[in-house]
Length: 466
Ligand code: ADP
Ligand code: GLC
Image 1 (spheres, protein in one colour):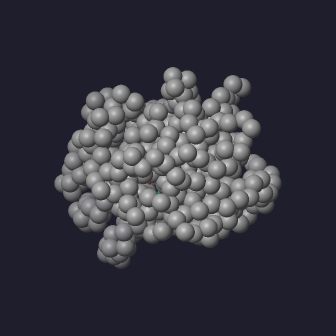
Image 2 (cartoon, rainbow, N blue to C red):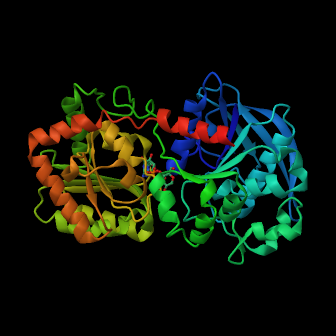
Image 3 (cartoon, rainbow, N blue to C red):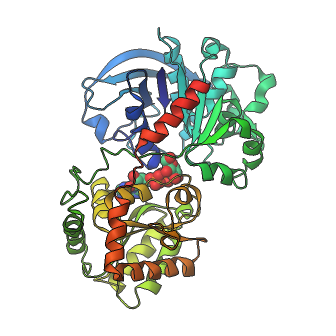
């Protein structure tokens, strides 16, 4: 089977969050003797594209309304990744030093149209087209409805929803940006008087997946306006839990971390990473270290963290480290605590892949008080490195973490409220003080296998059923 993933992000080329991790790992695990998996992504002006050489495979033009854009399809001169990757270069729209911006309607429309125009020219067409999130949500619609792509409309197309909060809405006025289709079918594009790429993708894809089973169920209750659509389309919807790339995320050979370790050497390895973090960020290494890594947005519950930290740092019996960026007010508040709790608290506002690995390897506990968490990869990385997750009981967090009070290995709280997060941290402190139990849990969690092996098989089963 030839599987073609189409996505806005792919690690290590362009990463904003977990979407990149998934699209950079799943194809690797899908490349077997009977399947080949490849990725098509936009050509951005980022470190990866700056540091690599490319060859041109195809050149053409596309039209958005009255505007004409030249585009090229590029391929790496030398590919060190474990899967094939193709880049859509629309210099006027996509080639920027960021992945997302305010003119994304035009940017991702151009990406999707160029991708399909190019696929039309292939001799050996894909057996499966796998789209990810709203940036590629118009592809299922175009495959089904656009006159240009009639020869592709027998290819099964899947849409994976990584996050239904973002839907890519734009106004009806831009309908003429799409390649010609029967306007009687305009309703397929519309949701609440706007063109809604995610909704159109859900309506037209042959199958829709979410990145965890619980998130699929939750979306039927709360999906930023798409609840009734998801309930209506339930027969073609399925939740498949994400996996992790167990080669990239492996404390035994992770080049980012300060000291590598195996299950047998977990204590000394983790101590070295913790000591490095505490020295670098002026924290007390004799205290349990709590960390947060993530986008500072409402969904992640990070707005409550300043209040939580003020409460739990009163006695100065823990250390806290934050790595994240996003909402400016939240960044300022988190930074402001540094001087008040110097020696016990620090924050790195920004994005730093290397530091994130060291934190998974050195923090004792990882906080994820998410309001919404479609899957969450951080908790799975934390498990693999031996940091105990403290998570809200929702979405993929609910599907991966069992509370210590239920013979499990993590700490769950039901609601995203300051007092509940504080209570969870107090429970974690107690666990930390019971040295044997703490160390047993740590040894237990690094053995949990969340690699893509299992979930990649689920996708293969789904592809075959189509
Ligand atoms: P989401 O995709 O919603 O942001 P996930 O848990 O799926 O959440 O994935 C987040 C990914 O982004 C993880 O690989 C995490 O380590 C990484 N990450 C998030 N924020 C940062 C940051 N500031 N620096 C480095 N890595 C980060
Ligand atoms: C989204 C979700 C996150 C998920 C990731 C990868 O960004 O917010 O929960 O892990 O996609 O699927």
